[in-house]
Image: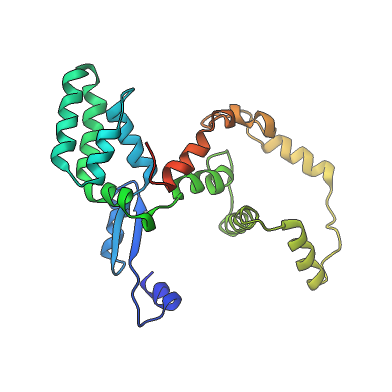
Length: 229
């Protein structure tokens, strides 16, 4: 990674690198290997644990304390919530322990505009949706190509026009000789019985959020913006 950074930005300058994630030890350990790097908790996980603490109540005081780097005010609000909602002790303490143990990373996420990203939402809905979590499996070569195609389309590319241009330049416009009946028979045999492959019914698949709830939009917004209250 250090070699790539030097090649991309030049050996004479070392840019500050932000390593963003859910504060898992293997993610935070990246700061030991990448020069001039800091860890920042992504907005999705920060808001997830703050909402655990807040429950149905407001989280404004918690956010204000984090932005101001005021641990005393944060702890005071935790104590108040424990007094007023003792039945919620476990989620409050879970959120409190996560935030306090990753205080610097959460504080930076809320106060450094250049550290924001929508990584969590994009990984889930740009890559995992097709690559792993929707009953899919790929070879390393196939995974690389599908990931590149989905990224190209998401960035506004016309995949059909791109493919036609590539095939035309390589003289590969001839149609492949495929026995469609054999292919259909093999597909029916191999497809997973508990998954639906019909797009309009895909929101009922196990583990998939309904697109009607807008949950995927909140994932992206919470991962990429400071106003994650």
